[in-house]
Amino acid sequence: QVQLVESGGGLVQAGGSLRLSCAASGRTFSTSAVAWFRQAPGKEREFVTAISWTGGNTYYTNSVKGRFTMSRDNAKNTVYLQMNSLKPEDTAVYYCAARRTATIRTMPGDYDYWGQGTQVTVSS
Image 1 (cartoon, rainbow, N blue to C red):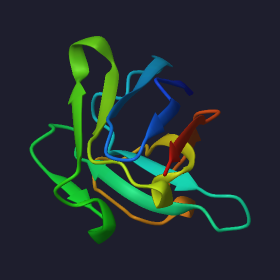
Image 2: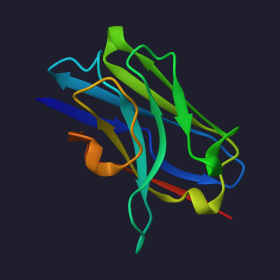
Image 3: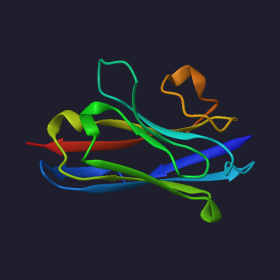
């Protein structure tokens, strides 16, 4: 079992930056693919980015390419999401998710463990 705890959310003006963290405890997730999803009010949960277990491969949804960067530190059992040039449409609850396996997937149903989420609000 893996427990995931997100932190770093908050309120920021458009154009600003935030850095989210996701700390894992329990079974190590150093060999797991990890992703960030987000869910805005009234919308379905959507994929944002994912990283392979080595950190060598990352995948981003088009709307965040060039603005968001995902990284991981397996020694600390932590992944990060650096979000720059934030836009009001980035407002959502951001969730960290991990798979039992190493390959990146983009559907919520492919992930086995979820954090509780952290709110990101971008004002215009």
